[in-house]
Length: 225
Image 1 (spheres, one colour):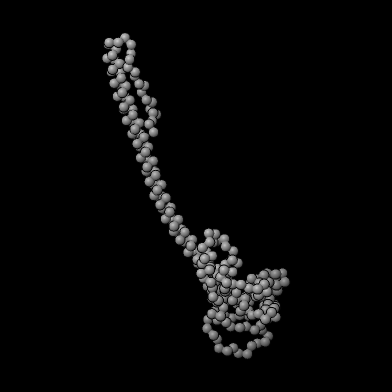
Image 2: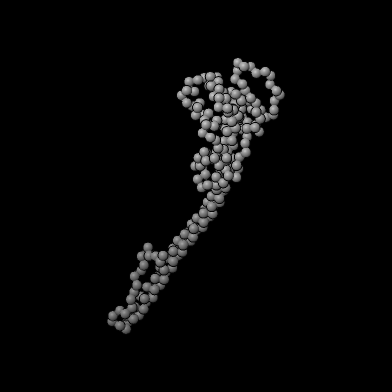
């Protein structure tokens, strides 16, 4: 839902505010039997937001765990305990006393209560819009940060995948080298044993005892790894 739609919805729920994009002509004489309404422009309701501070807040390590109250405070949204804010309005409407009232009755009581404190409906709506803008801005900054982090993570995963592939290739090459070395070792031992047997056979003609040692063939699992 867009900002304008949210404003219209909020104003409609309260029943005492009409949001317009351009100033209207002077209204006709009001009907005293109904709750008085006022018209305001969007520019009257949308306040200035501390963009740089909110951006800095979104740069915190645990940005998605930052309380919304901290976002509001950082954006410059502050109010006195008895100020008319959207939070106060929400808590009031959720209270047992207001739950029993129908919409028309609740509007009438609220209008009288707000007027009695020399406040205005615009105060509530302005507060709601400011808070909405603050968390929207925070969302934008946090999303950009997460997107960038995701981009770097994807790049790092690609690098690690390449490295893992290279390591697998190195492991396969080393295993192949081990197999090759075992084969060469068996061939060497076979030649050595043949040589030793040949020498032992020849020396046997001149001596009555063996002087040439003959090696034992290496087992199949012999390895030089």
